[in-house]
Amino acid sequence: MLNIKDEKNGGDLIVELEGRLDTTTSPQLEEKINAVIDGVSKLTFDLKNLEYISSAGLRVLLSAQKIMNKQGRMVVNNPTEEVQEIFEVTGFSDIFTIQ
Amino acid sequence: MRKILKIRKFGIHAKALAGIIIFTLLAIIAMCISGSLIFNRSVQKLYNERGYVVANIILKQIDHDKIAEYSKTWYEDDYYQEMVEYLKYIQEVSDAAYIYIGVPYEDKTIKYIYDSGSNMGFRDPIAAPFDELWEAYTKGVQPKSYLVRHSQYGYLTSSCLPVKDSKGNVVALLFVDTYMRVVQSTLQRFIINMIIIALILLGAFCLLNWHYMNSYIIDPLMVLRRNIKWFAENTTTDDSLNYIKTGDELEELAKSVQSMEQSIVEYIDNIETITAEKERISAELNVATKIQADMLPRKFPPFPERKEFDIYATMTPAKEVGGDFYDFFLIDDDHLALVMADVSGKGVPAALFMVNAKTLIKYRALMDRNFSPSAILYDVNNQLCEGNDMDLFITVWLGIIQISTGKIVAANAGHEHPAIKRKDGQFELDVYKHSPAVATMDGITFREHEFQLNPGDSLFVYTDGVPEAANEYNRLYGTNRMLKALNKNPKADAKELLETVKRDIDGFVEDSPQFDDITMLCFKYF
Image 1 (cartoon, rainbow over the protein chains, first blue to last red):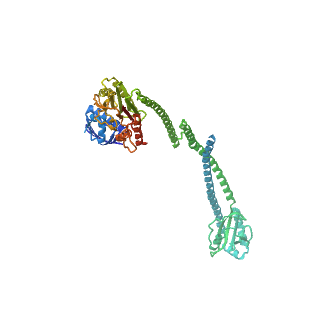
Image 2: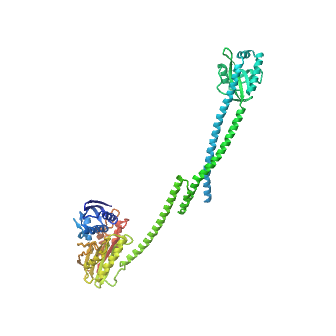
Image 3: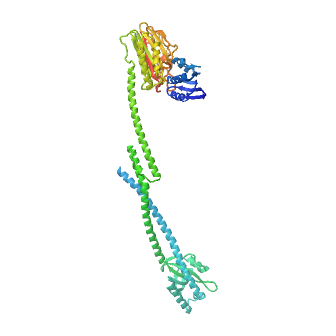
């Protein structure tokens, strides 16, 4: 189960994720991001309610990061301890800007 | 089948025909009854009224006081003869059946003063309804009914008028009887004519209705029925329904059925194509599974002549093909490379990426004379980043062991922490800072990490399919359970250790479906 809330304010896009971001739910997020990312200069992911992220979910975040490298910047906010650990283990903590 | 069809066909036709005939017959019978009743009554009235006209003429002409006298004396005088002549004349010209004058008595007899068929003083039982005659006699009124009766004198209607003397007393009743034979025969003719006309109409109506029902209802229904039956048995359709041109709901129904059947036929064709396609893909996936399995070294022990170490590894994909892989190969006589990797995602895309990654890592490692995992991954990363539009990435643990010394140089590109068991100790996670996964970003570098294996030590590497195996309550297996399973018998050989962990995972997840590939490798250094 994954709930996606997105709020666009000019070039600022805030995406709030709730639940699990895994193989079954990540296509949902990918579709959402591809639909709204045009013209975004700052993308913020709020992960305070994200329980779990799998490698398929990391791939979607990575795609977003690659797009944002070209058109602005991306920030990952408030990951839970579990998600932060996954970022650490997979080395994504070196790639994402985590706050 | 043909027989049933015929019987059923007769069934609906016969029902329609019987319905029409019964309904029309009932209508005719009702028409005849009501027609003859109305006719009979009006003809009776006509005859009866004609009788009254005659009676009134007679009443005007005869001497009422004389009648009063005769009712007492019962004696014929000259006037009586005159009256008889007159009455006979009237009877002759008026075509009346009987004309008579009489006095009714309470014993329901009548005593004739004059009767065209008998003599004065003759007594006869009264055939007409007595109450009405008695009322006419006692109250001096004209009877309300037509006094119709069948008697010994024939089928008659009586027109009856009271005869009053000059004082106004009723002294006798004057009757003019009219034969109803004419009425009867006329009525019979009427009914016969009516029945003949009705039968002709019925025949015409039946034929017309039959024709109409056949061409507009029954035949189209039969065509529909045959078509649907054929469709149900053979799942093919023809254009017979296009010939239903009734221009009403039936034509609409036929068109709907036709288009529905065509859709179903197309749908079935589609499903057949899709199923065939699915079977083909499934067959190909089976081959792919086999090819992928063949790509991983599966011969154990892999290097029977090397007594310094023992290796065992397994890969259990979640789908037909997976994104996990392990690998091990000798770079030279003294250097053994161990690889454990996991492509993001699963299935065919991950498998294709995995093939590329595995090949690149192996050949880049074989070419490396510095035995540097960091350098190997750097090149592999840059290669994989080229044209990686799908943004797949791969976590890799790559270790190169100098067999003679037990020194390991490893790079961990976003992969799980390996577990290490020291001689006589227990398996523990070896936690250190990881580098990002391979193929995430162009040009990134990978940290190297060095550690020492001593004789009797073991190394266990695995993919996230192990700690993230989930049971039906969505609880994860976790590294703690994994370490516990490993430590049940840490001295067991590599194969047995892996089997123990797999059994423990299976016991934990029970019937829940496997979400991720499960891959493990154990290296024991003697």
